[in-house]
Length: 217
Length: 222
Image (tube, chains in turn brown, purple):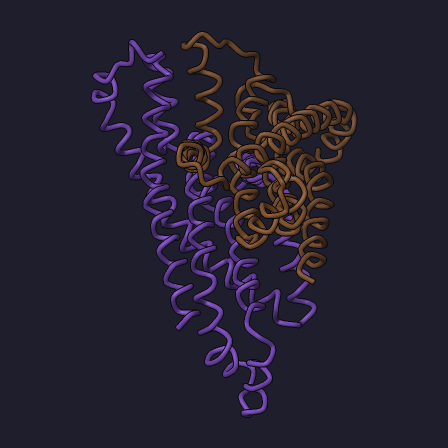
């Protein structure tokens, strides 16, 4: 019986690959968007302007304090009531962007805060504008602090894409869920799904560990 | 935007939300205790220096950290029955959460132990303390304080992770939101209330974590 199901599973492998492709697409697009928004918000947050600091603080608390499933339900079920009807795929990207950029914002703000005040002052007295100070003095140094946790966060975000399957995005998790309805071998199906996720995230975990060792020196 | 937000329905469903909140709380508490035990065992195996213990621990930690929690939950939920083991959903969920959090806690504990200065261990060695004594009197007292803030951080993550159990129909907080949505189709009321309750838990834990962090910095200065 086991070998029979194994054969069926091999037959369905292209289906799994299409799920993997969808997961990669969701992860790749949302990681880029999250990084861009996260860096902008993080730089604004590290700024001492009261308005930005607290407004972004509230956003970060909301995004970090609620589970991602609940956020996805809010984006997918509540936004339509407010007149924003989204297909599952863009809704998934939007939810990922909202959640991920909050986490990356915190990492970036933490990295910038770790740079001593003297660096800002030195940059300011060299006649650099605020943007130039950030671009040429602060960020290059802060990147050393930011990079290892950032890659670690990427791994967490890639794993979080599995949750977008609940609104019907045909990603790897959804493929496993659909398959298990036809092939009642849960262990085998989800071991395969897990293996594919492992193949994406483990290299990134190794990269994060490597960066941490390298930056610590 | 929220012109027709219906508070009456929320009050009507309040008992459902509160029972959901209660089970989220209980699940988190039980899982936290179990995950701590798992984490301590995995961490001790990982740092034991004995290869037959070390490699399984490394494999366990790396597999847990590089696959999504949802896959682990589904693996047990769909997998255990095919092995002929039938357990209630809530237990399946707690086991999955325990294994997942345990791996992260093992890494937090290991980082704490590694943070103890090598000189301290050498000092212990030259005082003639054996391995157990060094652990008990030198390493653990210094390492455990450092691990408290990240452990509370992991507790925050874990409470949010319990929301995934709603997908295998465990009756917890998120599930009560789903139940209300399917009965009344008022997702705004349902999920914003759910989010509100999660925020309450988050702020309590966050306050604790920040407090423990401040205490630690104070001790270092002292």
